[in-house]
Image (cartoon, rainbow, N blue to C red):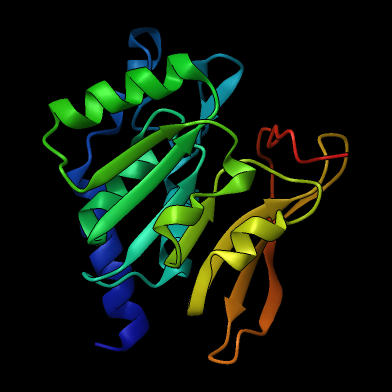
Length: 199
């Protein structure tokens, strides 16, 4: 099995281990198995499983990875990261969602997740650097703090674009010398990243 096939299989096992129906509101649970985004309240959504898989694969996590997630949301992506990485640091700006996700993830037994409520565009500087960073809301431009907190040879996956324009999922790789190289992956649609750092 090739390295990429092994990575896909490893991510797929993590996805199968996480019960998506636990992360959606009761009225949406009949649709939890559908490959579609679903509302979770507070004008936020849970991404479709195929996109979660794809974004997770792009991070190329290992069992020793420390990963930063911007936008805890329902906690579904957080749980999948926790299945794969040594430590997950997740930030959610909406207190209601942050509290709900934290309670559920702790109930499910995840003990390798650190939680913060606040402005995700600022990252988590005291815990940096991170081997991987994932952003689950679309910024108009990549927050510099997140690129700064990415470790050499690390990967950052994030959607960029405004709410009224086509958004694009990007992967940013930081080389050993600290230079960042970005490339487009695919068109996407995410809720906007709300941050006080935007002018």
